[in-house]
Length: 244
Image 1 (cartoon, rainbow, N blue to C red):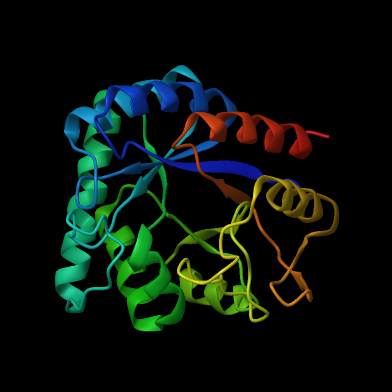
Image 2: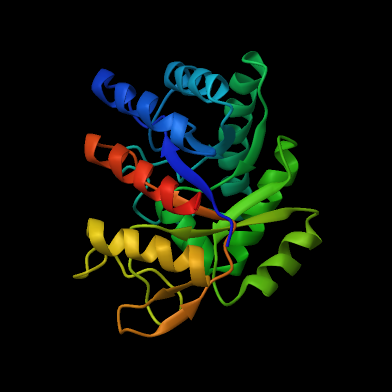
């Protein structure tokens, strides 16, 4: 299985974190850039976009619920029109910043609670898709690779959108294809298990669930995290596995 690497970036103005991101960027294919509603701001967007341009990395908008206090990790109840307007604003903000750097937004990947809620709520997925279409910034949505991939393709096709299906390098899976919630034991894989999961995805197109069952996944891109110095080494190791 050929997999791209994507990473959530542009989420802080901390100089040390920006230095880490500058070391991550050469090793990924897609940068999911925060749009200001859970983290980031126009200045951070610009710096991250410049890095993406330098290393020829595709740019994705990473919008969220309007929730900086909880870093976008708490579900919110918004009407469909309000959610669509919220997402449009974020996507267009990044699209404008990208255009100023002679770049374009290639896809949208919702962040945090919105991503998780979207995966279990068809009405939310429709609102996300409508927001992408109305933003006129791109025509691709990134969402989790699950057994419902064909259903999601049909939904996206009705909006004139294409999909990137995403797997996760360092997250454990439940038997139904959902991620193990972060507050449960074993949700985050240690380095050895993470590299083993990447190897299995590459060679077999599957993961081993928390209950030791084989789960087939058809994915286009693999999410990695680059928020600390150790992660840089791990991304390099993952990149080496995928390039074999």
